[in-house]
Length: 161
Image (cartoon, rainbow, N blue to C red):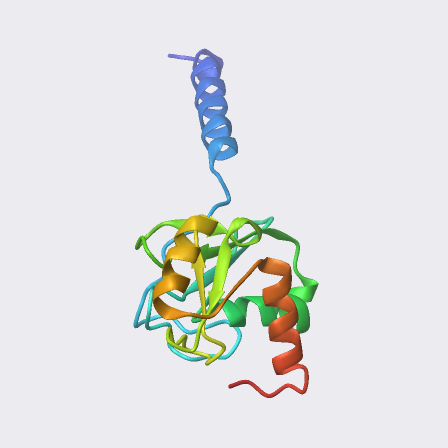
């Protein structure tokens, strides 16, 4: 009859592998189910991946948004103020599936690029890419802090749109 103690090294090795795997998991952006998932701020259906955004908590929970402005509002004047935030992610308008940390993106606010919540914000990986879009669509280049101020001012009375 085999002793359970003979299996102890196997259990220990399995535990070590699992611990290494879990510690290697990055709390980065996940998938958003376009056309199926609601915005965690305004409850509209997330319908355009070029504007969707997400927040990841320190516990790995994802909050999804239909627009960059909903992300900013949720963080600054909404329920997100109570969360332990690990990361804020915005989509690269030019490259589907490419997520950018919100504070590293360059934003274009242009009436010629209509976002779902009507503040007309789009995000870009580099300032050069944003400048290229601005030359075509006009508007203003802004950073994350300026974007947050615009959202706070526009929605400070609780009204959106």
